[in-house]
Image 1 (cartoon, rainbow, N blue to C red):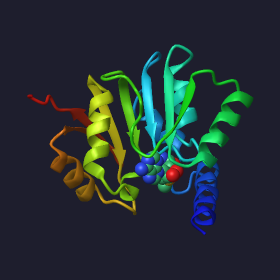
Image 2 (image 1 turned 60 degrees about the vertical axis):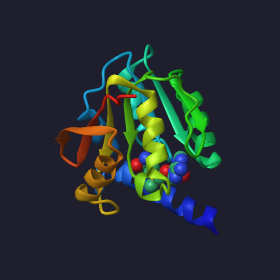
Image 3 (image 1 turned 60 degrees about the horizontal axis):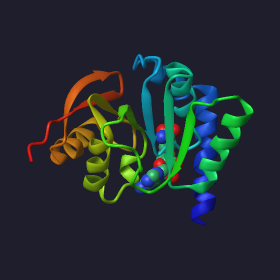
Length: 179
Ligand SMILES: C[S@@+](CC[C@H](N)C(=O)[O-])C[C@H]1O[C@@H](n2cnc3c(N)ncnc32)[C@H](O)[C@@H]1O
């Protein structure tokens, strides 16, 4: 049943991506101004709505790590990446740990997934670990999570500071943590 629900959700994400209603992920990602050669982590990537546009933006010298806990979508992304010749996408099947090197990621996309995470603090700690000191964590508010909730959850972690807002996107800088 859970799997069935997930498939329906992915079907609707596909419709959103094609129709642009209520928004087009490709346009959203373009607001970030990603640069060639950057390394991106798309956490909770779903069907890859942001993964593929981000991979186009960072080019062959860049890399997009597409992480999700659902083998179904990881397989889908791998097949599409192969079919469309994206050599700069690596997939990660996980429900929290990324296995990435400390401070190796320029931008983390955390879109549409936070409401589904039980232990948000542990996930934010992992994201803080892999983010470069001058990198940023990008989130997006929507009908499932309001701007105030996002600010509250991320603020409470004490790991990130609000850096900027671009439409529905809130970007957070990495806080320096004193040991
Ligand atoms: C609503 S979809 C959003 C997909 C994509 N980011 C987007 O905005 O189009 C949420 C995705 O997060 C994934 N997810 C939920 N909890 C997760 C976790 N703990 N770790 C990794 N992925 C998770 C789900 O499997 C699902 O694919």
